[in-house]
Length: 108
Image (tube, rainbow, N blue to C red):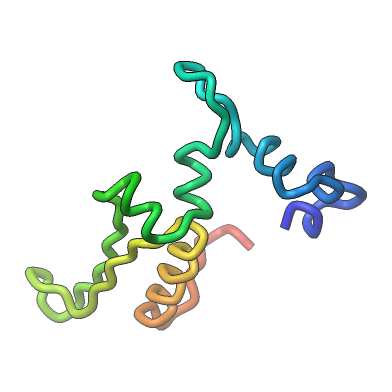
């Protein structure tokens, strides 16, 4: 996405996967132990579901729709996956329940 949205050569375009993760701050050295590895941000963005649950068991996104009775929900989705996949699932949930296209007045 970075290379598609910027005219000319973006520095990430010529990097290997490991160099890109280091550049984005997702791989580094633990200052307390001196060990190198992926940080929590990397796990939350790109990790597999079982790894996320091991590291951060309370993590989940709860999407609700309340239309008929505001004391109860009409539809609910609990999302427990990485943030990249969560975004897609939440957008699909929104598309399913929001009949009108979202817009802000005065902004084109």
